[in-house]
Image (cartoon, rainbow, N blue to C red; front, side):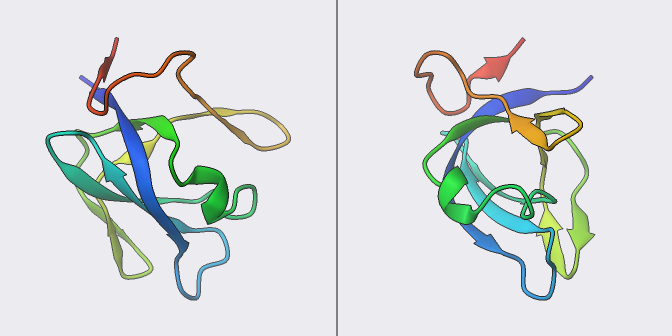
Length: 98
């Protein structure tokens, strides 16, 4: 069963020597995670910092270019680019998406 929670991106940077990867530091209220996402060609770190977004938090960690990812950003897959899902109202970090 997939567990999706809202997290606030507290820091974001490009992964060194990887054109497509961003490293996000995400606050889920009770815990923080580092998540690597392949969206750098569509979004800059400044686009994501401070945003509250949905993340899958119960995945096994994976390594991308030497960086550990402890979850996955959830976005819509369109033909042009991935589209971020942003809550319509302000919700607390760690809120479960059902």
